[in-house]
Image (cartoon, rainbow, N blue to C red):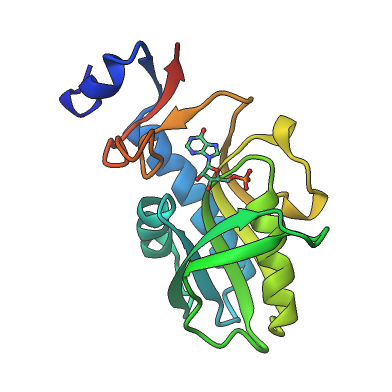
Length: 184
Ligand code: IMP
């Protein structure tokens, strides 16, 4: 058990290594190759969803080939308010103009899809030409919003909770270079 996870382990959980750093690197390169071929003649704007996607994003954008691009960051919290379409709270707001841009959202994991569903609606309203999603992980069995299905996926999983490679458990374990399944 890595020291960094010991405090979590004491709460009665244990961790099983699921994706090794080598396997993650292969997944990331495959996603980068797909994006490189789809965007070779475009100038996409990557929008990295903080906090969890920062490590995947750093690896992904460096693995692209011949893609002239810009990168910006947001942090959002999705919640359902009075409106049936839900609301997005921007903790770190978008600081880039997306009007007429080909946008690629970079996420760590798509679970129910609520975050992506709301973010896409917001970016469409701001005039983005196209919006695609690259997510390191995807839980297809939990998806509740069809438009949130990621276009580029590193690896799929069922409904287990995972940590490491940017993903946290109560704020910890983002810095683990493998991805672990959390077991009770
Ligand atoms: P969604 O809006 O339901 O798709 O949730 C997406 C967000 O939930 C991700 O960006 C993560 O912050 C969090 N999340 C969902 N599943 C996991 C997991 O297995 N490990 C860590 N965070 C998760």
